Image (cartoon, rainbow, N blue to C red; front, side):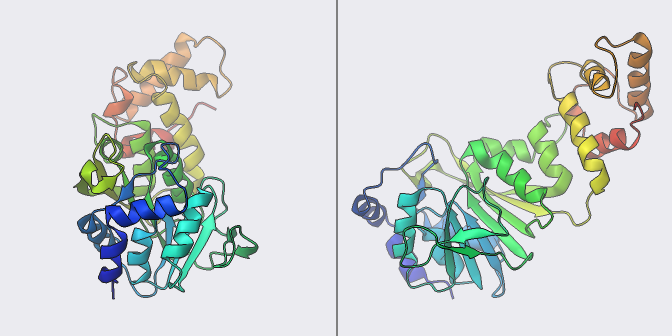
Length: 309
């Protein structure tokens, strides 16, 4: 059962401030440290994660351990990854009675999640290796906007992606991820190529301390099983990146630069330009369209019919 009595204590602003003061920690803008203080948001995250007793949760950015406690009361194991060494000490205190919580100090973008250094209860630094022994795990994270894209790509592109991702991030970033034509972006295409993203709920900036300048959102990302052919990924993203290289320009102009990357000359010939135009028209895409107007399926059609090598 979820330990609501514990959560009511730790989630108060006073307790959070006292913990930070005790360990001489000041909230860091660099690490995007805005701590959750709203129990309703906490419950919403836990409900959205659809937790089961056998679940393994990889939590990124656990902060003071508020969400960690709620997760640990529901699942088999929580692996909490925290970059700030001072916050690790706070985590050790707030989760000391939770035997199913493993704490890892490190940068999620630099860690091999299959072989991480875990921190024992009595240590300030890691001394043993911890291996994620299951490929059947869920990711829960509170992410600053500047690492949202690389974190999502890291896990969705891995050989063992999570079966579900629940992210708290800036409202604007979440809206960009779930966008549809004609408002697509490289970020939206990258996520939707691998998974189905949806905004579950918006979160007021008042739900955090210190209060950020903008509202946030709870984003649910469900990886699609066997969604795409692995052999198409490299070419797919090469074409998409070329298409979005200058978003305000027409596709015919952006994709002409792509031709250079496959052995073409510095200056695109009229013949090559005509080939690209025919390629677009064959897929029922107007050469004058912009990248933001194309769906993931249309990018896939372009990839499967690409023949300029």
